[in-house]
Every structure is written in C-alpha cells, then in structure tokens.
Image (tube, rainbow, N blue to C red):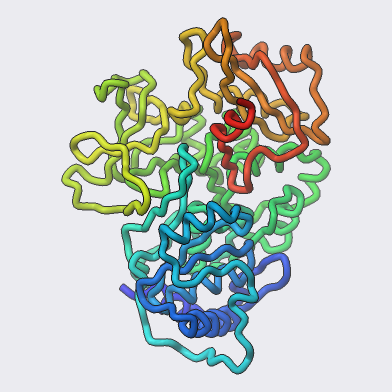
Length: 471
C-alpha cells in the first residue's frame, strides 16, 4: 500500500505532460498539478496545519479545489469539503464540529507565489482520507468521517469501472460525496479529470465532445436537463466516447433511465445506491435493470433488510425502512459520525431514513425518505414517485412534492414546479398528463410554479425546508 499523495506523485513522474485537470478556466498537466499541490501544502503548513487536522475547503469546482485536497493528503491532514455558497450560520456550525485548523473560501486563501518551494514533501497518510458533511433529513449538519485511511494498492485495478489513465467527466459539485469520490478515484487512477462549473446541460455535452471522456458521473436532475434539450442540440455533439455513465444520489424516474439506455446503450448505464456512510451498497447495470425495471439492484457489499414500524423484518414486496450493516460481526467500520448518532437496531443494523422494499429475488426498490412520506386519507404517497411523473412533462424542468395540511384528508399533495420563467402549465393539461401515470389520490391537488431551481447541482432537494416555508 502507498499513500494517496505518493500515488499522485507517481503519476506525475510517469507522464508529467499528460493533462491532469480541466476546469472552466484552464487545463493543468500532472507536473503542474503536482507543483501547485506541493506549494499549497506548504501554505497550509505555514498556517499551522499538521497531520490529523481537518481543513474545510469551500471552493467552486476549480483546479484549486483539487489541489487543496491533494495538499491535505500530502500533510496527512483531512480534506473537509463544503459548498462555496454555504450560508454563514451553517458554515460556522460545520467549522465548530470539524474543529478546522484552516478554512479555505477563496483561491486567495491558498495564494502561493513562485518563491514557495514546490519540491517533494515527506510522505504522509491522511486518517481518515475525507470528512464529508450532511444535513440529512433534519437539516442539522454533521460530519461523516471515512472509515479508511488515504492509502491505495498501486497494483489493484481502479474501482467504479474507471479506467487507468482514462478521462473522467464530472459535472457535479465536488463538495458532495458522490462527485468527490468519483473524482478522487479518477485522479488516483491517473485520469484526466474534466470539471464542469455550475451545471449547464449543453455545456456538458460540449465538454464531452471536446475531451472524449470514457466515464461520467451524473444525477437524475442532470440527466433530465440534458434529455430535454432539443434533439437537434443533443445530436450536435459526439458522446460516443462514453463507455460508463454512473447515476446516483436521487431516485431516477424509469422513463428517464429508459431514455438514456436507448440513447447510450444498456451497457453504458450504471446505478449505485448507498449513503456517504457506505455500510452497504447496491449496483446494477442498465442491461440488468431492463429485466427488473425500477430497481437499484442487489446488495453487493454489506447487508440490507426491510423493517416495519415495530422493528420487525418485513417479507418480500412490503414497503418499510431500509436498514444496513457493513458486516454481521461488526468488524468493518465504514464511517464515523461527528455531531450525530446513527438510528440503530440490535445486531449492528443502521438506517439512513430511506424507505423501500425487496422483491423475492433480492432486488431493492426505493420508495422515499421516511420523513418525506405524505399520508393522504390513510394512504401513503411517496413524493419521488409523483415528482417522476411531473418531471416527464416536457415543460417541467424539475419538481418538488410536499404534504400540506388538509381538513378533509389530513394532508394534501402539493407540487412546486420549476418551469421556464415560472410560467404555469394549464391545469387541464397537467391533469391529462398525470391521468395515466398516477392513481387519483397521488395526484397533486394544488400547484405552484417558480423560475428558481428546486434542486442543487447534486440533485438534492430539502422538502422539509420547502414545507416549512409554506407553513
């Protein structure tokens, strides 16, 4: 095993002139990235960062973000990414949790002139290799520390079907766990990492056409925005280089997944379901998914089971809360919380709050988060299912469905819909669109329209916050 820092250095030594990262502004080679990371490490060290310290990184998707992460590894420090647009109060809460030695919010915070030494540093290993943040369903921030150090087997093949010395397209924000993991995995595999800025559907296709990535990470919101481009725009760009496209982070409507399978081929589309905690993981290919439409796959790492409201194991086909564990004997520790406690059952089982069911063959089907479920006249309505039907409308850019109080039914389904310029869709047109997609009690009774995005660049939506605002 070697350190992540040594792995990056080895790539630079093997092919210094190969492109390492491209962002909105420029491309740097492996040698240039190595130089920038070494100088950044020395800037952080001059500010007191030592092995084991957390460094909060709140930069956009830029080369400097990645250089700061590598700099942390070179010092044995722990990169702790946050959104560059994080509100001050939430940032302060995270900094307090992390006890961050340094907070990087501007590239100027890492300014390192040419006189700063860019030579090699003593080898170090970050323990853990990352510290991600999550608000989860509660909105209260917590840290999720990785359960492994920053070490890699130099002779092992990369994970996630990422190719050695390939090219990876990353349109997602690096402060989220999925984009962070896929991007760092790609870098450690010697890939040219192509970073999108704020997500733009056509710009993403342009970057694919220009840089010919063989792998890409997306979330369903990105998939929908790309798919809803005019056909003449999509056909303008060559995307044939893509051999593997991963989607995760939110439920993908079956109609959208089918569209991408038809477009890029079943063998190119892959889905993964897991939390940042990584107690357990499911993976499924597009080809297998076509035989089990709607599933997120079978458990490939760890264990999962479906649990009822009284903690009882549920049989196949019944919806309940998904509980996971990394191993039966509890010997595998995949994460550690700071600022939160896991929801547990005896035997090492833990829940992330997601709902779903397993079929008789062990395929997992997601419903929604327990906290987002709407009880309408005694019937359960899962917002993700309603949103999938709404988002299929050609004029809907995205949607969020919440439950609001109703004197008759207890709760009513309310849809917030993002359209161009916030222009409403005729009620009769929407009812006709939903009539053959949703049973009547799941159909929204009220609508509102907005020209503001409802989901962030990682496809996440905080329904609880939207509901609170309307109450």
